Length: 467
Image (tube, rainbow, N blue to C red; front, side):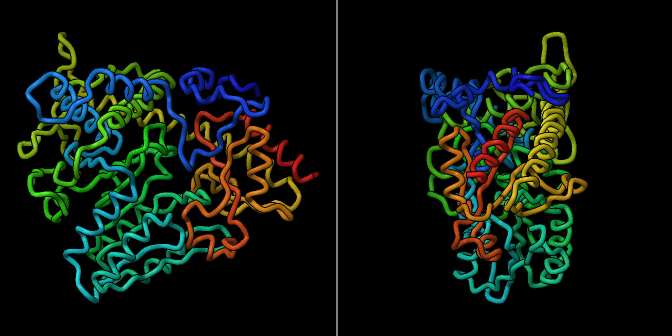
């Protein structure tokens, strides 16, 4: 299949034309970006939003002058965009440097209310950014740490083991939505229910899931969910959802002049405004993909529209819908359109992820079939095609007589960008006894990848194995 051919799910020529980095070559070979789990490429509009903000609006917030007011409006719109992405209230959206920093900060605040003898639960499958902050909290507060084990044969959580380790002493369950190493999608809805039944908080790391699947915190009913926008086509920042009641109740570590109103009480120092402008553009890219690919013809919200369409929080002066409703309808045009921006943008995001899922499923099936035919190659994780809904198109492999680093290097020389190592999923690589021998070679597919790229990667791997 030519790289620009349109699949049943996505118009790839149109999509790829929006990502300038995809046009690169390496040693005369077209660059093939299979490093999405470490950070995706960004569309032109994200680059433009960042540079436009720095050219025109670079200012601090709260000033009585034009650039500061435009910055305030931009931050409000970006927060509303992420609220649509998460399906939550805008005052439940927290911006930060990255997922790791946000998780450490929240863990410090949660730990203030815990005492010796309380228990927390983490898993062997998670990225260490959803493990180490909780281990540090446990050490500081004298907590007991429980570990949920995995099924080695398919790298899925042992749910019976996990359930057996949640009890009346459990105060927090931390789990990833999907594994950044082997692609497993965890049954987070069930885990959240188990946590809540015991009176525990549920903290979800959705960094790896976000580029592949729709996030709906209202449906999940999680207490916290965190992701990194650079993993879903945006700039290097982290974004956290926290239930309003927790953000009000917990006590953040902050400087005294900072407000006590949410969400700002959880945002320390001056934020990276230019990258937040990029986040708003990133969410709009995803929404536009849904509008275009599914012909939804939804009204396009104005970029940096002051006040947005969300109900206003009297406490923080921020727009937010009710957690389980789309809020009141406001006019988006002089003619009186009664559709809310949340309903239209959220619907477009939902449509985008439906198309992404279909396309990525085709990529995954083609990749799995080809990898299975390569001598000496082992795939870690779920390989049964009837269970592909339980995984992302992220594949961890090893090939006999080749270290992951050797494979990544040889592929890199041919223009294929892959990762080797443990990807901070240290507990998993240690548990599977591959840490000391280089971890895995990781192949990460996202929606801008093509069937042709999959076929060329498979040909390159066959060539490397053949010597």
